[in-house]
Length: 437
Image 1 (cartoon, rainbow, N blue to C red):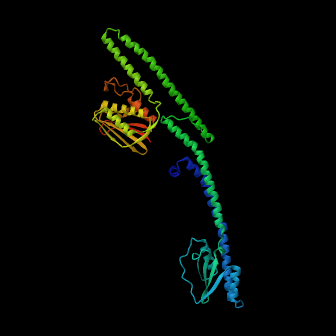
Image 2: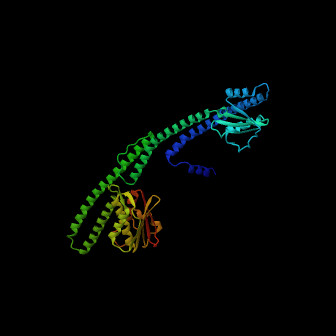
Image 3: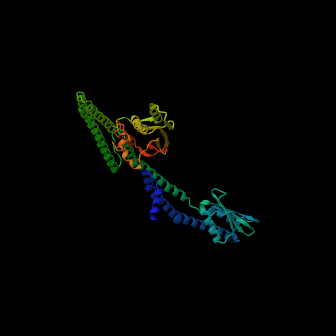
């Protein structure tokens, strides 16, 4: 049960570090402001308003009692209360109180006034909404009622608004400062993530300068060291392969020259086939190892690229379903080589090929279906290994050394994508390529 509750709470929390940090900073401030406000309104503002309302009702009761006393002049009493207590009072004879309207239970002013008037056993009617600064109060008396116009500041404290203002503005100020600081703290993390993403796609990353807090800078320095080690390793591999290419081609050339002097044609033909196979293996191996070329990343229309690839084959058994104007960032020549390898494989083992291109959920999806024999499901992972062949007797063409899918997989993954094998609707092989955009 607790695991499910914990999972539910995590699903409600923001996913980004900036908003999580803002939540950590803002939540205590908001809780503190609400707590202080509740304490203030309950212990100070409400009690103050109750005391002021009680005093007002007491003054009204005093006025009515004094009005009953024949020793006081009525006009002088009204003027005295108006002058000293800011009451505007007049007696309305032979009038009855209006019917009580809906009581505003949500208003603290109305609740306090109603409570205190009831405690004095007075028959009353009042309205606090007709006038902006006055309370219209009627008290039943003899054959009529007293009409009181009382300033609202006699029953409520105006300090509440100032208090709310002073407690809200600092909270907004603190949260604004927190947002600025959090932006500055998360920016280095975002830059590091973008640099890692670009490097993972095989793009050239300029000299990366770590910034931010000590831990973030440390992560940035380690990423930069890792990037330089990987680049150094790739350069060393390319240099080594160049040396291997030079060293192997020289003896192969000597073997070809020596074969020209052998008179036995059967031996010459056998050795020549072996030499040609060695050259093909060497060329494809160099192509595979250099698949991560130094080509710059560019934005291009992959729809046009696929159409041009298909047109080169001039094969009426290749059908396409391509979305128009699909753009992506990548190394155009590498992707062209990848698609060519996949189409060649499909044409080698099947008679019909269908290619589709569409976008879905921030992905560019390319599918290549054929009606060939397909690949057993347990071999899906193995066929991406260099020089791996499922069945050598399956294809008598010696031009294949088992690197087509390896190169295609390397190109796709160098762009941050993925390549998936499945069964096609024509019962052959489906190759699905996913590129992020």
